[in-house]
Amino acid sequence: MRISDLKGIFKTSILTIESIENEYEDYYTIKMIPEKNLDWSPGEHGIFKLLSRKAKGRKWRVFSVASVPGEGFMLIGTRTGEVVSYFKKELISMEKGDILSIRGPFGWFKVQDSTSPMVMVAAGVGITPVRSIIKQLEKDRSRSIELIYTASDFHLFEDELQSITLDNNKLTIHLVYSKEETNTVLANLIAKYKDEAYYFLSGSPSFIQSIKKQIKDKGIKGKRIINDPFIGY
Image 1 (tube, rainbow, N blue to C red):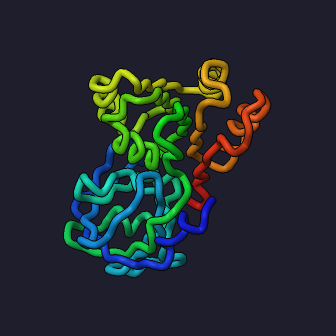
Image 2: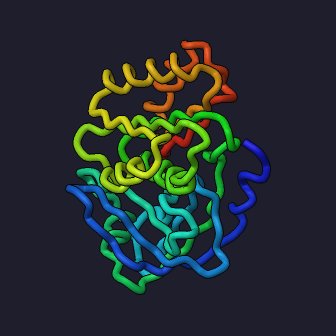
């Protein structure tokens, strides 16, 4: 992490709700229109705060941004879980035109250079920052990019991600449904790319800890591993 990765933390901006979609069961995506001067780097996250609704308890949450600035909107994804927090109840009940604020975006989960292969491992809604990076690199055919996307039931953004692979033969997506599948595919990719690749991990802290251990046990240096843990998501 560099000091420059945190520069956005001091900036607060207003977002306007454009749409909220219930993608599958408890999976939701929220599309917002940012202020014109708001910019961010793919892979970053922000601190989102409710303004137009009264929510009990903590009125803010951290979400990774799933879109790139060029799309003209800011997109986040989340799961509510069986016991829905007051924050998420208020968030998913907002209507078009409602507003909330964001502090940031900022973060260190970013493309490291223009040539190294990239192995990305995402679990569940950990796909959100990965989507933004893939959108950033969708026309990049200068290196191999391989995504292992694990989920037990539903792969958010699956159709969109698969469509990108049709136009970029350097991008490969491995959809997996279990820890065993994830470990097998990852072992093959580590053997293929070794220390030449950067390894991007996005998911729960326990998921990242497990995957990071597997990578390091194969002799990959820690500086080649970039992670984005979802804490208190």
